[in-house]
Length: 297
Image 1 (cartoon, rainbow, N blue to C red):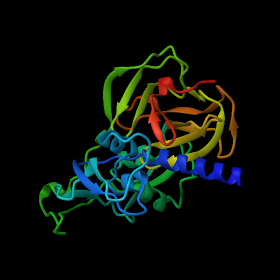
Image 2 (image 1 turned 90 degrees about the vertical axis):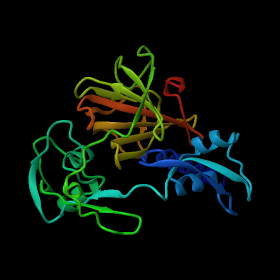
Image 3 (image 1 turned 135 degrees about the vertical axis):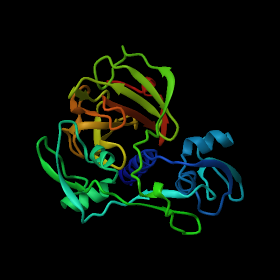
Image 4 (image 1 turned 60 degrees about the vertical axis):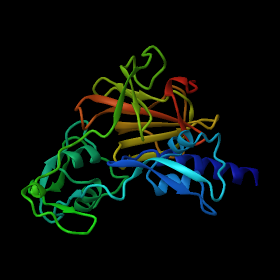
């Protein structure tokens, strides 16, 4: 029974950590009345928010909430926001692209104003399908169609609606810098803190530099993850989950035990800045903590 509970707790922690890997667009605070059976996690998912931001906004210590309790939801997706625009490249209209070093499914999708799902469909691929330098894959034709829909469901027929959307970096970078002399996944990086829905650090790296585990543990997830390219989650014996994202290559598999400073992959190329870098997030009890304060070794 004890091992079963432990397994459930680990799985729950991983799911909670993965839930932080998301982005939003137009946000405003709102109020939610807690219903029977709801948890902070289910409420955060409902509003595309995070457990941490809801806890901080309501000064909640822990995760205990009560039925009927009113919660302020910071950064909840606005139901009266401006019309959204979705780029919908035709899956049938495709051309060939040659994979370059550092490319990921996500970075290629961004470059062609499409999404990873479309690329998978065009190439009969999936989340576990890797890419090799020089490989030829199908990508949507450069002729794309943008369909804007308003809350009323009306189509936007303006000339702007037919233009592809620009690549926009939705991360919020802090002026706070980290100590490059600490043990990081790459050697002596420039450490930049990232705030908002994604809390962690961005680490500069050399091209194809080795990315090493800063804490021993078991690989809980390994593969491509929506919006973050190649990702590896490692859970240590202390329960901390280390999320290494933006990798160029992944060299470990789910279930593997990884020793301290063992290589788990290589640095990737950021699709926004075109610079070689990775990101690191660390979670404790499902909540993000400062990676600089996370256990090493």
